[in-house]
Image (cartoon, rainbow, N blue to C red):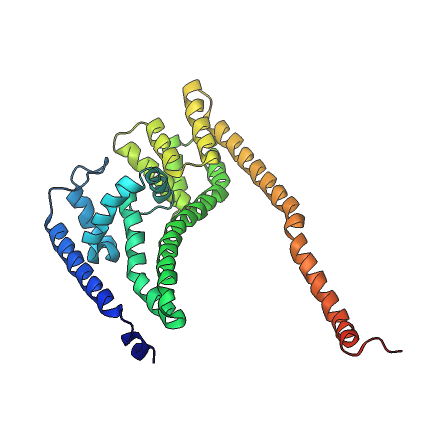
Length: 310
């Protein structure tokens, strides 16, 4: 019935012609962009961008199948969302996404998935509400891109919380190993092996890799600070670097920082517990109101329908 009604619309042939023209233009852009090899953006950490792209094609199916579209959207994002790209890059590093991703390309990946899903939203919304559902379908496509972008932030925050929860135990282990006579590097290797599979082990393992590749200890820890971009982690790394510069025993620094982290965790727990009463006020009022309505509702209905009778 809907298809029969849709054929009677006078604007339908024009809309079909416009869609066909857009499809031809999109196909032409797709083919021309896929043949371009000398106009690629170079990442700061990659000498040959083609190597990075090959790794992304191997790791991500969306990038592999829709690379021309992703590249076009990435060029658009470099201009329109330039202010947001540093934040996206920090979140990519904090969420431990592969280092081959550039922030504008990850944002283009989210936009590509939203474009792929938009026809489905259009079909559902138009089937339910008619032609006016086109606006709703387009809005759902924009919301899809926003949710995918927001998912990166949630991944970064969840991983940071896991690291901060386990950090005091890692510092305690480093303290015990160093007080037992082990060196700092050996203690760090033992800690990475002990917590293997946890995000904190991955971060400290990258510190060890950076040191093996020629960075100084301070540079490796500063790189970890920049990757995570968290106040607590920044404070710990700053204390470690300052302790080395001033000659303070590293084991003592680790013990102090572990105690500081535990104190901050207790303070956060007290803050959450103090806010629980305020957050439960509205649900409690709603529950009380519903209970009153259930108890007094029949009496009120009886009074409204039949009046007050003795």
